[in-house]
Length: 319
Length: 282
Image 1 (tube, helix red, strand yellow):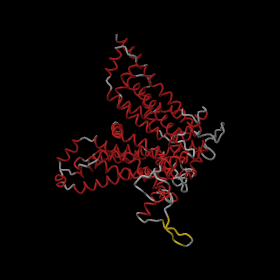
Image 2 (image 1 turned 90 degrees about the vertical axis):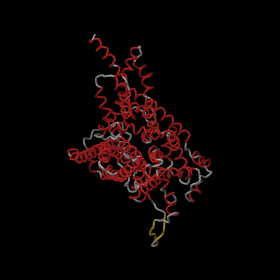
Image 3 (image 1 turned 30 degrees about the horizontal axis):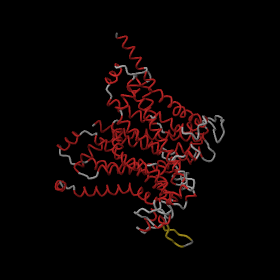
């Protein structure tokens, strides 16, 4: 009887293969195989319209390590991600703490959260085009606002005379990077608020109750309970934002000239990969090496974050 | 109530936070508002300054757009077609995979689960060059198949749905159905899918928005303008032929954004609770 039962169970369990088969098939064809194929292409000289290729060993990787444009793109990506992430986490943390504080009795919390999350759902390509129009030179809405309402002009010297002119935002490196970082912040901090609020909700109420019994004020409960308990959620947000940020593509791609202008200073690694593979000489092999380089750099950053956060938690939990 | 706030010395903080909330709300809305207003104004009106009142030039802007080969209606329906197809396929096959992984104890199950968790962490660019070359060698460039089919292996959706299943599914239910003689796929389609509806709805919303917004894969693969999706069309507005048609440019961007705004107006509650649902179980 027992024997027969096991047989029937195995037979039923075999159905599992049918259920996961489509996933496995598509995964192998469209994800696993292309990933391995990318690794292979990175060791070849596949270029342009050619169908054939030769293996060239580590040549593409040697070129990558020495390519100042690649490292420039890595730097740009990291700078723009950082300019977006620090205010993103800061603003979101403050908002999440305020919105979760029932003693404050804030009005319109639900609608506020819905509104600040809204930009996250918009088509990134359209958002890039929108901000390109808003910051346009000479008569985009931002320039109109600065001139008509604030009386702000860009003071330039031309032919020995100083004249007031509209800002050429996309000619200026800091402004352009700032606009990219702002758009990223604008699109993502609402989601971070929601995640942090979810994290705060899951903190046990008894922790707060016992702290209040011990005479803690709201500042102390925030500092000694909320923030330490949110650490895993903040780590999660940091790592996912970093992985996503290293892939940043549509905004810097469409905001200026598709090559990360001005002077390639908003060119992210993804934009560089596109420029190499799908423009000019179509150097697929080098683009494959870039994508592997990006992947390795992302892993290194993730490990650094992990160890950095580890070291700081250890003494606390030992206490 | 106000007295209680006063006593705690919170009135100042209370007002201050509301001002910040209003300010941040405006920061989120104003760019979209200017977009929608300018989409209705003529180029001269747009050049003359910012306005908070809509103009009367939607029809003119629409003609300015479409007369230059900007196939916006076609693009809209292409995007809609892709988004619906990708949502249905993605959600159905992901729930099938999640169910298979959760209910049946077959060999390789843990390996596959580990693989799914690993795939989640891999950046999509890692496989992109190989994917493009593979599709090119299959002669499937300029075809929707390589855009649609990969959604069947959506690791994130499987992860979310399996976690949902493990929190709600009673094995007794399946056993009872088996005793009644129901086949395994029949059980999945007729019993499991209906009880998964809340999670399926959340995933469908995200999947729909994700496909609607998808720019890069179609941008690289698709070459005939007839098959362009909305984000690809919007990207064309960078071109010189639209240089002076500011109203038209704003209108073109608005057409890609308004459906999402309408969708969000009705779905925001589910979307926000969906994000929270996904996050707490991480």
